[in-house]
Structure formats: structure tokens, C-alpha cells
Image (cartoon, rainbow, N blue to C red; front, side, top):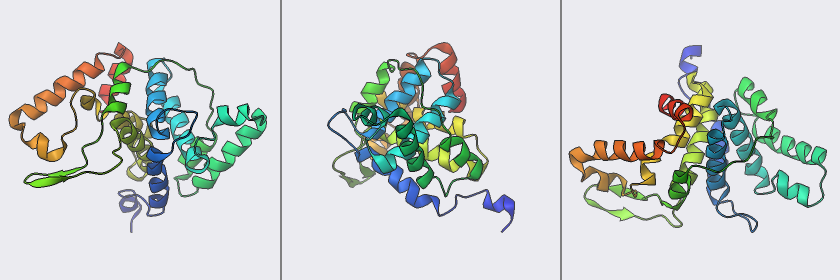
Length: 236
């Protein structure tokens, strides 16, 4: 197979890692509200809204997700509160990321393993909470009954998982991981207004589907500053 052909698809070795990252939609703990994936989504948008460069946000969020795939909610704050020194916390998290990063593209692996954690805290845009409260539709098909999945994931969890997976898959298509990350975070902004009726329900809107989604997306984008909005629109 030529090098060009190899770049057209992801290596199979990534699949187990992607499954583990998908499971972060179900990682919860007593100290936090919502799953890790839901909080990853909120934190990423909060950083972006605070003016943190998208490159730094993509790096930090993806690195934290890799660590959480092994440590769950044993994050830096929790480990520190338990009396573990900052140097030891960094070493623990570094080992967690390194353990999972082996199948990644070498340049991407190095970028993520050495990620810095110190980013400012800030409030997230209002649409973040609405997406966290908006459940995914489950499996739908025109003319057939809905297959409901329990517990349903929400759109914040789904979007975070897509964004992080996109970063890991980007090198396989010579894509920019930062652009893919931002697009992943934003690809369901319309659902901050529109409940997810699934493919079957959407098809019933007919010619109104595209303009309704576009208007709903605009309402969410209106909550962003002009520079961030431009970044998001360009990525999408």
C-alpha cells in the first residue's frame, strides 16, 4: 500500500483507544455533576470563550481525556486534595497519557504527552448547559419505531467524544487536529434549541430542516465573541 493510501484511513490500532474514550460519557463521580465527557465539553468551551487559543484548548482537553480513560475522575484537583504532591500528580497523569498514547501518530503523541495543564477557568456559554440537558434521540429510521438507548447520552457528551476522537484521527487524513477539534465541539450547536428527533423526525421537516437548523445554529453562535465565532465558523 502506498504512503498516500495509508493516509486515507486510520490505523486499526486506534479502535480500542477510541472505544475507551467513548466510555468517558459514562464516567461519573461523587464530587462532580455530569459525566467526564460532559464536563470536558463545558471546560473546552469555557476556555475558548475566555480567549485561550484553540490549539491550547484542543491539546489540554485531549490530553485530559487520555488521562481520564485510565484514571477516571482522579484528576489533578482530586489527587491534590488527597495530599499527593504536584510533582507526583504530574507524574501520575503523564504515565496515564503515555500508556494510552502508543498507537497515535508520533508527532501527535509527543504533542499530547507533554501537554501543559494550567489554563484559566471561566464561565461557559449558555448553550453548553442546554446541550448537556438535551438527550440524543437514539436510533431512528423513517417508517420504523425508535430504538431507545438507556441511559441516553446528551449532546455535550457526544460532541466532546467526537472532538477528542477527531484529534486522534486527524493525522490519518493529514487534517489539522485543532480545526477538527473545534468543528467536533460545534457540530451540534443547533441542538441547543432543537430537540433531537433523530433522522426519522428530521426527514418530516422536509424543506424546513436546513433553514431551521441554520437559524438554531445562529442563535447559539450569537452567544460567542466575534473572534471565537469566526474561529468556529471557519472550522465548521
